[in-house]
Length: 293
Image 1 (cartoon, helix red, strand yellow):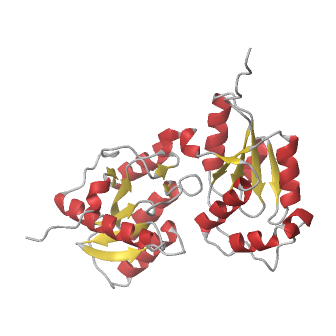
Image 2 (image 1 turned 120 degrees about the horizontal axis):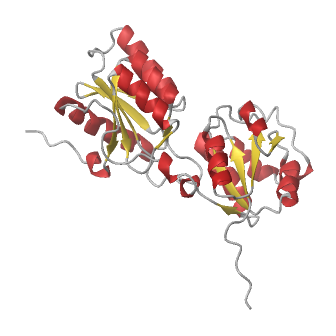
Image 3 (image 1 turned 60 degrees about the horizontal axis):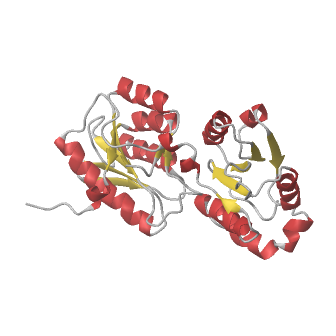
């Protein structure tokens, strides 16, 4: 009798910040799949202590490989955000890290998504299989239609199209994933600071009268960069995004269908409904140019 392939192998999740690693852990527990969370000191939330885990510092690659070997694990996932880019001056590489120093230096100088993508390629070269978290928790991705009580107006829809085009364009430049538009004018484009900080900047622009719009009459659109590897970097919003948007006077959010994840969905929708905000899934066709009359 032929051996039956091991279809549900143990998996380790290299964790950044935020709640996503723990959402994945709970989903894996429900699926009865063995897992190990690998917390990055200075990035991962202390909540990791509630799950099977280890902590590693940047540069402790020997410790990481040993943990994977002890767990008999050849499958990896990446989840969460990297806020503090590794600082080469402060990293203390162990022996394994020193041997791979040229590769690791190139990883450290990248941005959020590039850090995880670089680490992923580092492990792929060594025979590890990288899995997408989307296969484990597909429900976190935005579906079609409006998720909230409020529906976008015709003006909102024109702003959504323009913001979607802008977000898509800057994504092609690897500059960001989001844009804000009001009254058919681009207010802000995301840069290295991230979405929530860009939204905060929009609030400053409005409060300083550098651009004007009525409260709840600006829209935010978020979509992945063209060709973005969703195994390492999935565009994300959560409750903090909604809170920041409310403060900035943003009244609607458009998210690329099946390509953006919403963390703590019920909280996000409740918070948006309380503020009279809409959240809607955007079809990729909305990237097409606006036809002027």
